[in-house]
Image 1 (cartoon, helix red, strand yellow):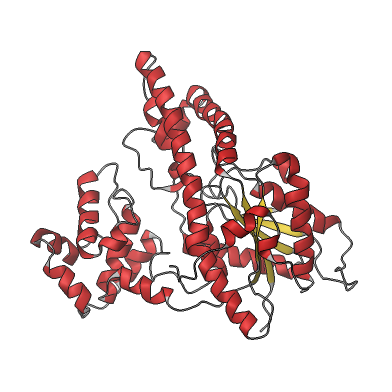
Image 2 (tube, helix red, strand yellow):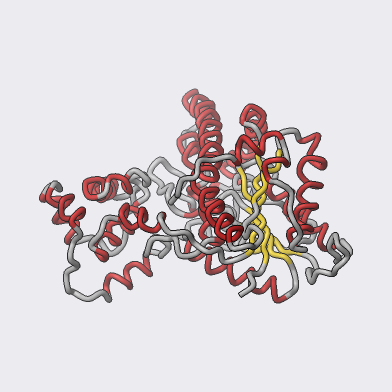
Length: 430
């Protein structure tokens, strides 16, 4: 079966992903619909599908870096700002909604452009079947699965049996009586920490992936162990050993800026985000109250996971005093640090997790005599003064050739930084 094409744009926060997506969408809306070889292609414009886990929520547009209506330039933006701030929305739900949006866009003979900084979502959209069972389920789905499961005990694997033998008795009692719904780290910190301690005792590799306050993922991990009789880490490792065929023929564009240039750019952008937080606190105190913006709030749920909420909670809840000013300075510095660390994690995920899966898929298709199924290009967005030359024009040329199924340029030769960042060890990633 011929795979339908999509464009996917990934990269760190603040690097210009939305800008490029809109430029490409407008180019294909206004261009003559012919390929470089003179043949016609069917695409009549494009639609943008959001792949940022925080931009799916309504509100806090500056804090979550949403593009404004004016900046959207009339291009449809789907899966953006449509969830309530405190609503849970996980990867499996997004994949379902994104595939529906892509199918609808293809039916319109328009090109889907998936763009966002949550590369984890994007990877599992393009490469299906790599999510561990139940990791993508909501609490309600998880409760329905476990409450309707048969009472017959699952036979434990040897690895799980050995882990259980070393687990304290009180934690084993918790394992045998797992809660139906994850406890709130804000209101039930002891229960949340104990739940994570149980996971750390049984499966330390997976426990290290989740903060103890991220009780939903901790509980899912434990439910997976209990239902399957196997350690989650063993299941993940087993899945990582098998290559996954992509769901779409995907052109992956990775926007990248060198940290020494990006970090000051991020710092300047934070000023607007800080202004938004303080303005809302001053003019809409009910919003702060509704959001439970307090030191005890649950920062693992909905939009409250955004960088800024946790960092500014103490400042916004401190009465006017010298301490409030100190809290403000501290919050700004912690927000800068959190943003830079997040950008590092985004790059690390792309290089260590996404690219190995992409390379494995491309190797398989090339060996079968076909073109790479997920051609991937790094575009150097370090110098904003050279954006058109280094980013926009290169992206448009590659996209036209991709849609026309023409031979594409060598990804390592597109820019000086491409060879450095795209060259990775041939390891299998999760």
